[in-house]
Image (cartoon, rainbow, N blue to C red; front, side, top):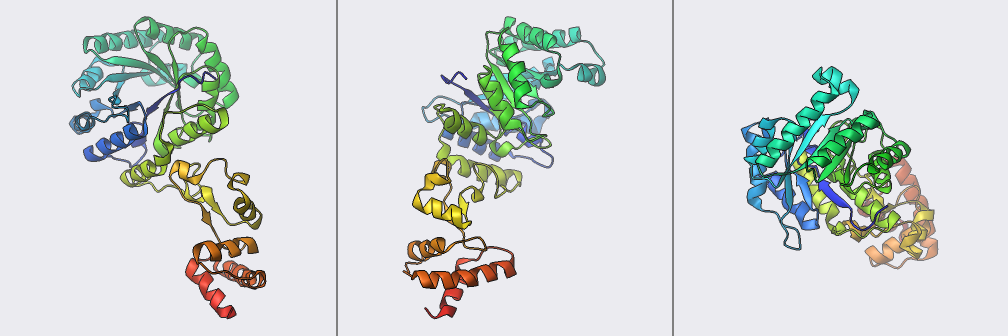
Length: 381
């Protein structure tokens, strides 16, 4: 993997909003863009202006907010566009930095969706690029359904985009059909015929979006299009926070992203999209740092690195010591001393543990602090 610089483009405001039932207001789009810029994300897709006047207004709202990175550099705001001149014109009217030009490249979609040929796809792409140039827009060319596209044609498609001035090409695993081994092989072959970077855009239909994005990067891709929390169509996209933390902690890549605000940004996106963050969600779920099992809790108390690869503070969370059926006496001793300011004996902790387990089984959940204190008082200790 080339660890010099991996570029992130956030797609929460476009692909994320294409999740069923999700709608962002103009104000919410501007706020999310500012939050993303604030943590150091360099580029975003702000929306799809060709949808109509409301979407145009939202994209313009993002531009009016003038989001900037911590360094003071303006956030690069792109608009999504089909390879149609009118789509590109709609994007240009919003004053965006650049445009993402997208068209299907797989045989099944060319034939069954467009009823056209590969030559037509090439012509459509060339015309859209010509329009982008006339409008003074930077452009990235995206191959929808790239993972089901014949590699020879996909290579020619990307090479034409490169020859016409594309700054980057996007590889879309639109149906989540890749696996990490296949993604690695395909991106490695594609890289051999290109000078410009490849951007990974992976969907999570088989639960492999993050793995496929990482595999593509290992094969030579230089960028990732991801969303906060993986918000997106159907099963969603690769979550930006998962890709970033994986690169940092599994591959030692130096990321210029403030990961300590991941939970903050995710909470805002969750509220705006009316999609709760699952407590078990990787990286940003509250259960990531919640410990109940006696073996795990004891290991955490001795040294957090026994069961935590990174600290809760590094992603904006807090560690929780949960008292329930699976707890041990060490956790109870710690809970009372650290959180309640009460020193109890080992004997009291053992007696209390019996009551805790019985109550947790009856309630089918861990105990709240008040319940724990009631049990402690019942002991008369």
